[in-house]
Length: 383
Image (cartoon, rainbow, N blue to C red; front, side, top):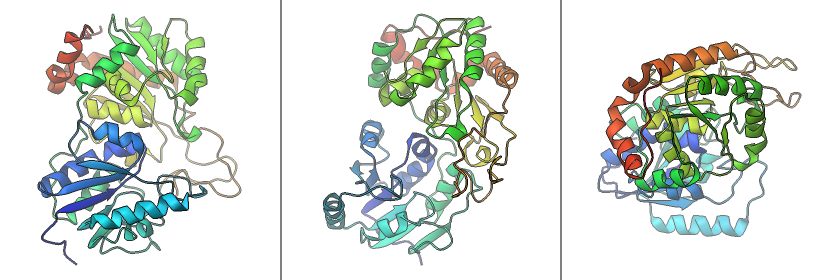
């Protein structure tokens, strides 16, 4: 089946977390370029509205209600009235095309079909309900490339293979209200939504001290629920650091990362933001996730990979077809990145710092001008 020739309204289903949104930005750009006159409606989460407010890749965001397996855990109990109201409104939109960009389709494909769009397209794993146009969903593929490959079903052409955003003036002002920069600074982000992707706080403490010893102030970031982790990092340091866990809105986080000299983090949302903002970064990855989630480029991004592959309780292999997928006999309550050494991370930090301004050159003027005018000093090259 071929894609329709006249597309006036498109729905994109991806109610994802922050990192998942960032890696899909090149695909959203390709869709926008393919249908410049169409209204593009993003079906996502409430915070997506703020993100897209000044980034015109989509025209508006419709918030997906709590629904099992679509933006929520499969065990969630939906508000049936809210779900019915949502689908009634979405069917009234009369979408020409509905695009499923949220997983293999076990739950998201039936959800998409209830929109009753004229044509559907999306990922489809084995056993999932098929759509009009399908792209096989296999785990071992870079997520940015996966999303771009899906857009080829629509005849779209990639305009970039790397996510790129700029911090807006408002986001930079938000950051300056939370953290008043006086010197070049580094960001440590020790949290992650999944324990299996989380390195130990003691390691982050040593890395933070190494950054401070190299002349950088240090900020520790995280959501409110990660305040204890951030506190463990600061309390384990010999140098002072600013604990910003729970204090940053998404906009302030974007503004802060855009002005940092370097970010060190687990494989999670702020790390992907650093990639998109072209802020030098060091990312800590489990062996099974480096292929799908690490950036395609290495100019400003160092990747440190763990060697742990198997669960010590059930022997599940953390890679290939069943990454991070818990079995009934194993709760996986341990870290798959625990064997990364502090020396390896510090060596990667030094490599990124030595590249200095060269790694930031492409967007330096655009990302720094507003911060300078707001009274925030531009970071200097660290020796």
